[in-house]
Amino acid sequence: MPDTFFASVLDKNSDGVITHSLSQLPMSELAPDQILVKVACSSLNYKDALVYQGHPGIARHYPHVPGIDAAGTVVRSPHPDFPAGTAVIVTGFGLGTSAWGGHAEYIAVPADWLVRRPSAMSAEDSMALGTAGFTAALCVDALLRHDTRPEQGEILVSGASGGVGSVAVALLAQLGFQVAAVTRKPGLEAYFHQLGAQRTVAAAELATAPERALHKEEYAGAIDTVGGSTLSTLLKRIRYGGSVAACGMAENANFSSTVFPFILRGVNLLGIDSVAYPQSRRQAIWDKLANEWRLPQLQAITQAIGLKEVEAASQAMLAGERTGRTVVVI
Image 1 (cartoon, rainbow, N blue to C red):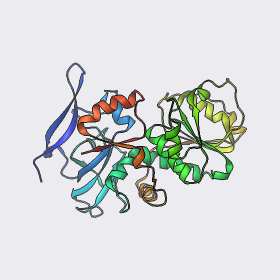
Image 2: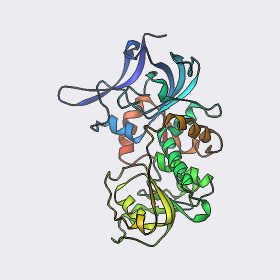
Image 3: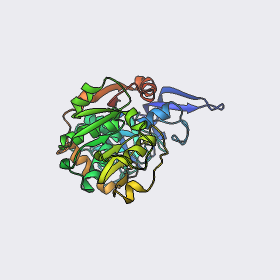
Image 4: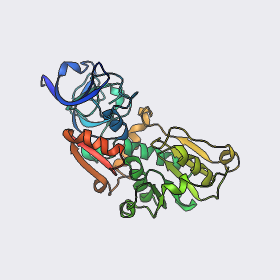
């Protein structure tokens, strides 16, 4: 076992200025009573980008190692369910927020944060999905559990060029749904067609809709990654008995609605949380993503970068200049 490990480190000085460096850290910083994982790769998510750019309230303590995802191999374990040599995935819980994250050669985490990486899925593919792909799968699973079926009509996905949205579009299309991809970015029709979307909708169409309590029933369901006025408008356009899985706030954390979509059309608003999702059900979702929900488009929508490129990539992500998924190779 080495005495030190390499990591992407953020620190905050006495003036509150956050700095970034690639550093060697002592292994003694990692809790000896937790499971030690050698990280093969991580990913870059919207939350990671916020941490790198100093957004308050996400990283709890400094110095801090970002990275809310990690895939690797157990090298030291006090837990019989995860012996040394086990291939594992970590997403959510406190990784990269309250605890040091996956943008490092090693992480130390509790056993109940881990799932076994399915044998049909490589470490790189698991991080091409990561928290974003896992969240998209939870959204799709929620729609299916609320009896959303392809023959009922079109499903709309907002923020479709982002990580969650891209995977959601591809997964819905693979399951036989007609998908409309919503985006603020022009010129992405070919990208969405590659994912399986039948058409592209400009985000402005939803944001500038006339202010009414209800609109014409258009969509059988939706996956919303942006919140704000987009979610408000979506709820008014869902067909009777349809569902909206809400998982993000890229536009705004607030939205407004009357009770009419719920009491006149029976619309279901499904809140999706991937951070504390029950461990007993996480494995089943990852197994689906490795097998019957496996996405042939995944590599085509994924970019790989190294730790030296993460800070610049985070700036581009927050500026809306990146699409799809980003794997961070350790």
